[in-house]
Length: 499
Ligand code: SF4
Ligand code: SF4
Image (cartoon, rainbow, N blue to C red; front, side, top):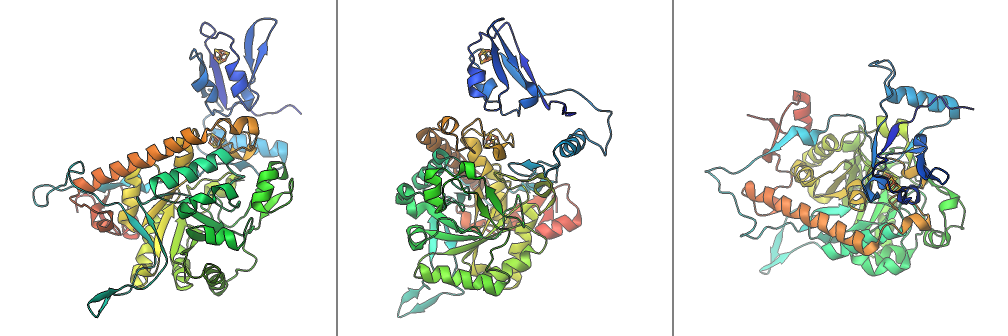
């Protein structure tokens, strides 16, 4: 059947520059380019183009420009180009539309409506190039009060992890991302002194030497779990939900389950890896409590256990239950959080912006007097160091980054991760494509990113006259809202600009 879909992107080639080197043909994993030997010309099928920009970046003569196709339907505020295309795709396929990465709808981005404070005259600013600035962060339960016995400070022996900077790499499983990306994340976390999260796809044995920098996940598929898996890591995370697809599980198709992935996930080669929507042993906070304590028991009470949920309407109440169930760390993942594959309708319509959910959860835990029982980590839409600074002032102890880390490895957010054909070698198991990420170069890019953001956080601390990130935590007086309604300021717990 002839498709009624118009190509989304245009391939514009400058024939005066093109030297027919065929680099674009070799680099494109979506079969856009071919060579017409008879006419010594490159030809393209632009209906296949996903605008990943691999070809234009690598074209040696800068002959290629990928643009939005300027075809137009009659302008209509309700029937936008996207909604017409989506509907036609479904009329042709009869299927659920899949996508990758996080929600790309123009929901209000609250980070861009929050401004920071700075010292002027009455409180001196600090020069981070001359004065020490402390970014070290400890995750885990904190004591209710301190006691001094026989002249010694008595500190309860709660399990914890220490980070050199409050930025961690969020859960991205081996299977969803390539081995070289997974290894880059592990090595970078080790070099920086922070954590990377294995996601739910198991943990290859040869990477267990990075255990002190590894968080292992226990998700609904329970792939690759055994006693060693938990005990070799620094922290265990129970994944209940994920911001990009709250309320549903995951599916790694059998063709991606190679020998190494099969060994790592402990499932037969070539079989589909299905993560159910719920954990089949968790239907209440009491059930969650049993799993938290089973994991603590299995790790001899030496590892902090975190619980991750999507940012949903009743997140504050659920978070309170999670903390009371014994979670040492709670993780809230917002609606802009990324994914390898999700139904587009869920990705774009379910969940809450992390800024609102984070503030609401922190407020609730403070009101209940249990904020110190657990650390709070947020994720889903962190784009730069100021987002991190604002998140910490809203109440987070640390953040996870996912999409931002993949961008450091080459990702251009084309949203085609679910095809398994990532031209940048990131969300693919194709050996030819995966080689495009060199783990040593990838590690350096990630280390550079975390170093740059940490330096910028120190700059922001210095201009606020503060020399430790600990003094920013939950310090909402550092923030002012701009262009926000009263109810939004109320949820965020901040004043409007000028107040
Ligand atoms: S990579 Fe550039 S120069 Fe080479 S064939 Fe493609 S468009 Fe032409
Ligand atoms: S990981 Fe690859 S496929 Fe996914 S959005 Fe990034 S570039 Fe596109």
